[in-house]
Structure formats: structure tokens, C-alpha cells
Length: 94
Image (cartoon, rainbow, N blue to C red; front, side, top):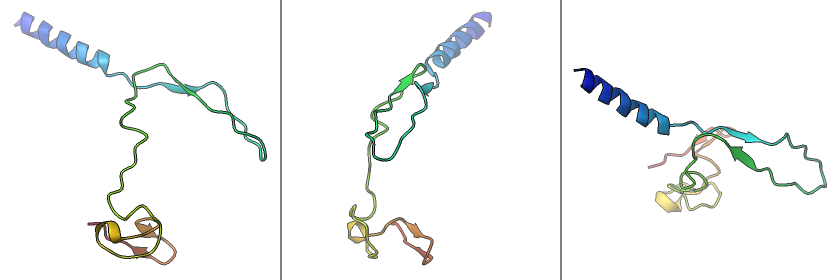
């Protein structure tokens, strides 16, 4: 019984050791002024890894990627966002 508990504890400890939260920081606050070039702001991660394949991708699942106000199915629809507040028009995404 003790061996089973020890094996379970060590297994869970090993799993939790690999599940580290990213700790993303920036070197200093950036001040941006009108008319000047913006210097790159590079983050530093001292925690767990952030998978590059998850972020930085865009998927279009409705519409054709162009803005407009056309109702339609699939890629024939055009809209600025799925719900427009000013004219209270909501698009059905199917």
C-alpha cells in the first residue's frame, strides 16, 4: 500500500513540475510620443514555455475576411463584427 502511494505521489509531482505558468515581463515601461519611431518592445519569459503555434494565427470561420454589411452563408457574408451596437444588428454565424 505504501509503495502504491509513493508511486502515485511521485508521478503527480513529476507532472506538476512540468506544468509551469509563464512569467512574462518587460524591461521597462515604454513611452510613445507622436511623430517618433516606436522601438520594439521585447518580452522576457522566465517561467514555463509559451507554444508559438497557438498564438499568432488567425482563422476565418465566417465571412470572407473583408469588412462590409452583407448577409450570407459561409464565405459570402461580410460584416465588421458579429454584433453591431449602433444599429442593433446581429449576424447569425452558422
